[in-house]
Structures are given as structure tokens and as C-alpha cells.
Image (cartoon, rainbow, N blue to C red; front, side):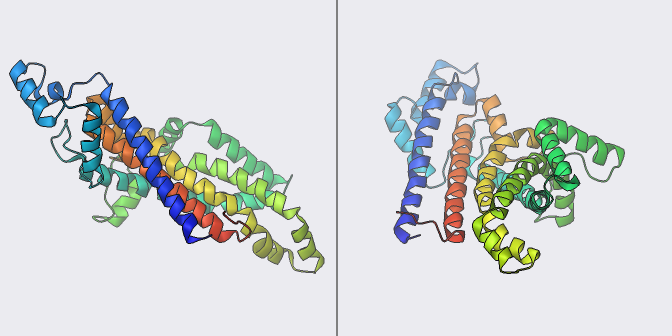
Length: 315
């Protein structure tokens, strides 16, 4: 892994975000929403609408509007929200932070549960532990997020009253309160991740346990625990790095339902509110920030994969 390869990956991030910015800006231009009417209301006079369009530069060619927008966006200025009148950038970055907190907490819980489950299922192939792991995986995939969220809320919030059902508390304000409010969303988000990753870890571990170098380690008389921990798991867990990066993107886009059910003001929920209100600056900022985050996560996964697996050589 060389510096030139890392630089090419960084350039790929820039190219990806550029393409997404063109697509997002183009799509928002054809939406059935008039920014001037959204700001002033349908009862505004023609002169007032013309004045606001002129102030916003809406009469300029599309390419000029795009260059002006992307020029401000690279500095973090995404304009003002048509819904609240507040700067969009800080609002979306704060929402992204809440979503990332939820996403990384769900991924951490998933790794703690899924990796041991997958390893035990592989070592105990065909036995009760393997059967139970398969059952957990099938159930996790079968239940959609809104069903899992409802079941957890009914059991842990309504019936047992162990956790609050909705709401969000910043960990900078109250750590224990943040843990309590995030518990149900994190459990819900991690269920389907555990189902996917545990099956992958099981499959990869089985492949590695039947490989030649593991057989050679056993023939040397090494204890089975040493063979598993030092020789098998390192290579069996490499694909999990890629899955974790993909899960970040999945969670950013896929936890909108979870954020809506548990009233978490994350970026997915903010984007849905912006779409409903036809708040074009917020839509543009949310989509661009999410795509950039996803691109960075995938690049970090590639770098980590190359660092962990010395056999990989990038041209």
C-alpha cells in the first residue's frame, strides 16, 4: 500500500462527491417546488416573488447556479433553510453527528455479539450452537426495522419500563441519559446487522478452518485455541472490515424509520422533513453530506483491509 494509492483513493472521494453534487442539484431543480413561493407563501405578490428570485439568483443559468452553490458548499455554507430560516450546514452536521453516534453504537454492539456467534457456530458446525445461530440470523433478517422497534418498545419501554420509549439526549449533557435513550434504537439497528455478520463470520471461519495453513498448524501440534485465535480468526475476520464500512452507509440511509419511531433528530429524519417541506437547501445539504460520509467510510475500509492483509498489493 503506497502513498500514491492513498492519494488516488482520496481523489476518488472527490470525484464521487462531485458526481453526487451534480445529480443532487439537478434533481432538486426539477422538483415541483418554487423557492420564492416557499419562502414568501402563495399569497405573495408577483413583484415580491420577482425580487426574491433576483436576490437568490434563480434567474441565472442552471450551470451558474450550480457553480455558485457548490462554491459555497465546499466552505460549509449550504444556504438558509426555507423551513426554519436558519443556516443549513450546522443543522445538518449536528444531525449527522447524532446519526453517526447511533450507527457506531449499533456496529459496536453488533461486533460484540455477531463475531462470537459466528465463530462458535463455525467451530460447532452442525451442533446446537450452530442451529441457534442460524435461527437468530433468520429471525433478524425476517423482521423489518419497524416491527423490531415496535416489539422492543412494547417490551422494554411499555411493559417492563426499563427504558424511555422516545427522545434523544446528548451525551455531552447527560451520559447516562444518552445511553438510556439510545438503547432501544441501537438494539433495533443492530438486530439485522447481527444476522448478516454472524452468518458471514461463520462462513469465512469455516473456509479458513479447512485451509491448508490451518491444517499445517494443527499438524505441528499447536493447541486448537492457538490455531483458532492466531491463525484462523485474523483472516476470517478480514471481510468484516468491509461489511462494517458498508453498514455505516446502510445505517445512515436505513435508520430513517428508526429515527422516526424513536424521535431521534438524525440526518435521515431531517432529510425526510426537508423533503416533505420541499426545503431545497436542506435536501441538497443532507444528500451531499450523506454521500460524502459513505464515500469516506468505504475508503477507510479499503485502507484498513490493505493494512491488515499483507498479501494485498495495489498497483
